[in-house]
Length: 382
Image (cartoon, rainbow, N blue to C red; front, side, top):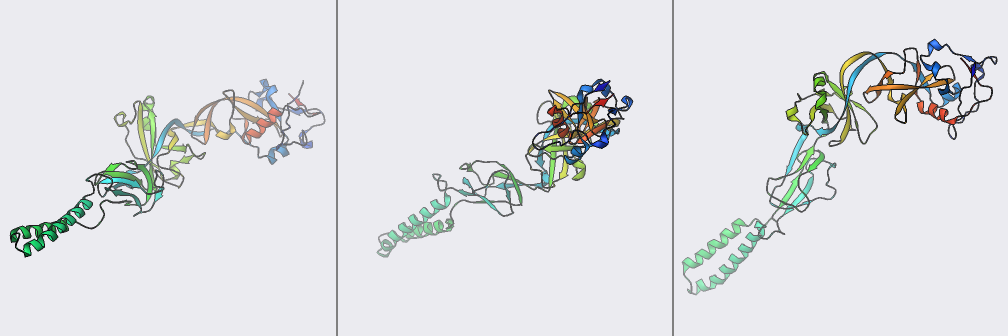
């Protein structure tokens, strides 16, 4: 019985000039498939797709035989990148007054050691500018002394009264520094401003913390593990993570990452979760404060069928892969997926060790499937 295979004319960028290559045809007797070599595809002839070999090569479609391998149990959670405690410094106010941040000083800005991030002034506060008050006192004492000096010469006032005015003037001058009241707040170390603790125009006291500066060489990854996974806690040794602003997955093993905390439910920042902390070297792509998707890596599961995530396509909530049947024919196969480490994913059912699966360019085969065209003279014999 001859079965017509659906073909592919991928419109626009994917144009297939011919439906079959000469080498892929026989003498009109059709292609022959050994059903025993392709798993359960024999019941899914309607899923077969034709893609000429030269087109597959042109558009980067590659496949490989399923090869069971060791795969770690994975728990997918969320978390956040934090600054390492040893890499943080605090900027404090040097005087009481109203704080005014320098232009461009915002959370996430990188600054150098010694950079002035804010100025502090007390002029706008009634009675708050001590230096200005001292200046007024000096001027008042000087006027009083100037008034009493001629009176003392004329013996209208006593020497005791005159000396008291001189002493008051000298004391006022000693208290007056001549420098405007207030100050500036400087960064003690180079790094990134990860937190501003006060707002523009807020009143601060001397010594009050106003900002946190974090170094970016060494960072901390906090993973929030749901308490239901507590029995697996002792098996977790490392992790991979992907930030919300990036498509790249970072492996802690590749950035000198290590587990640094002994977590407990008591240390949880939010109810129902257990925090797990890892320390790692920043490769330049991690940003303190960013929220991330984390794959906690546990014990090894042997003989697992594992594929790159890009090999999986999704349709109406179901997951599929494309199994290569021969040089130019593919089959869409429904699979059940398991855990993922961010780069690879475990296949729980739908494939066997004898299947050859498209691992790169699955989207091209999917487009080919959608074309729905049948090339003249092409048949598939089962």
